[in-house]
Length: 336
Picture 1: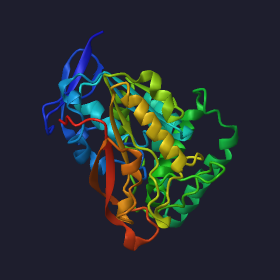
Picture 2 (picture 1 turned 120 degrees about the vertical axis):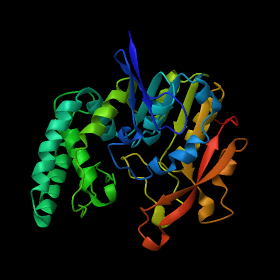
Picture 3 (picture 1 turned 90 degrees about the vertical axis):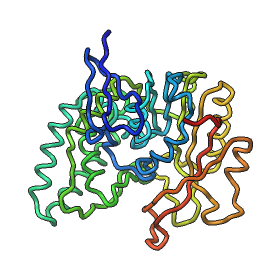
């Protein structure tokens, strides 16, 4: 099978981008680079430069054959690596079924998704502010009412409408959050955007192309074990450990990620380390609030821990939003 290589003309380094079907080399600018099609609390778009500097040297050398991301979220890191590094295989997964339905639908039915999303976008933007609010809650109500009987396991035509509604709600809700209650119902209120971009069809098409060579799975983070070996780079971006009562936001799914889950992830990190895979893990930095709270230093004793600066905006107290430290745990020291 012949393949086409997309090369980004203004890349910060002369590295390979996405491999796609075809027989020619295409050159495109970074202006049309695929970006996450969903907003996501804790998304890594703003940290890509800092993360990139800490990727393993094996990624640049081309000796990493597989990339694994078991908490894919918005997929910012996945999309970045897929477009700038010569990785052949990708495994992305998440415990949020809505997210996995959306990824699989964008991969397999992108044109139909775009067509329906454009229709919904036009209906929404044609309304005045008050009518938009009503429209938002009508879509949200339908989205939640359909959930109990929705088939999340087998791809079917309903997946397209589900994905369209998810993208719409995500692009028009308050702060672009994804948050659910104990019943798994989306409960974020309407936002007040003047002219939101709901259907970015060019970006959806680009993301779809990248997803063509990706395995997209629903499930626990441990299910990636079968896909990991010594030629694999794994990036973990789990729900963050709360560092204060007002920063306790990890309601991305019905599954709570408490300290027991953090330790279960730590043990799995060690398991993959024993396979000689390259590992990177992100999390909150408890020392932002308490300089003596060395939770992660103790949990990941023996591994390298770096701190990066991030702007976070989901704290309910506006005065506590802004730049804070986050941690990176690495099992390697050979950077790019």
